[in-house]
Image 1 (tube, helix red, strand yellow):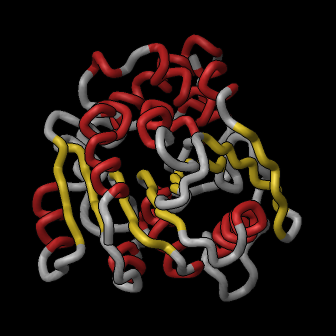
Image 2 (image 1 turned 180 degrees about the horizontal axis):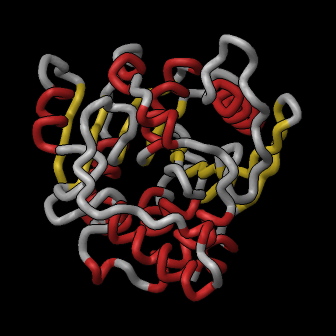
Length: 279
């Protein structure tokens, strides 16, 4: 299934300041809807959006990168003195996207987890972003509520133990319903974890989401799963939405952190309605 969906994409390798970024493009060009760019989470890849590609690319161009330091893309350089750790990544993302679609081309933008914080900061840096939707975004600065410890899969003595650790971590962090930890979810997690060379956790825990979102005056959709362990969603979304008439916050019942996978049909409806709406 992964190979079949990947085969539908047009792959583009673009380079900026010596950093190569692999972008996958799905769907048709649209005269009325801007391109939609979706950023994956930490220890992730474009495949974090696998169950959303068909629905979201039906009527417009969908651009999915492996962000610098992840999966099929090159590794960003260390930040220069005075730079944030994420700055080289943001420059490579922006430079390569603009090379592919044109600088200043309006886009819609989404992000998941670490990719949510990245999307908010990317919008603040690039501009020309019409609408932003974030799934289980990092960088909110409130307490996590994890009750199960993660296992260091890299320290596993053999492949069997590694598989067990990766599967455990899917349940501890990413997915609430054990039935959602299927062969596809495991394959995405396994491949993506092995392709990760950027430390995103420290960036997410450092905060900055609210400040970045405050620079964007367009419509915003903020979504968390009911059982997301990276936040306490209901008070968080209430606080984020308060006083912001163009910001909508939603809690998806029954979902964990990887909400767009675990509740794909509901998430796809939310995103299609949000991104398809006129300003």
